Image 1: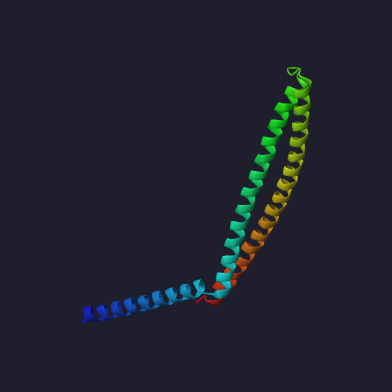
Image 2 (image 1 turned 45 degrees about the vertical axis):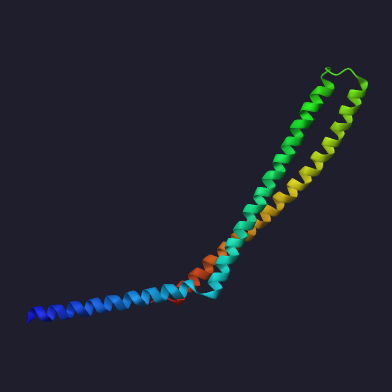
Length: 145
């Protein structure tokens, strides 16, 4: 008879474990389906994608500036190095150098603007992550057993 009681208790414990597991699954489901929490997650993810995109653009702008600077340096050395003696070639090189310097200046302005936008996006991302942490903490406290 003792064995029957032990089996009955074991059955009760198993039933209680199954019920508690179902409660935990339901609570986790509620946390995952919270519309405010989902919006906060979506906003944080979108902010991260925007920051990454702007950082890629800023890196491309910086690469453009570096390429123009390398070309300017090469042309400058050639122009003032004394290796070119034809006056027409010297004038053409000077014009090209002026154009390249103008393009570099414009590229620097664009690169700086892209860096500013990337920094702004990073700030938005940090704010979104903070909002997400707050929403997760709020929701976790609401569904706590």
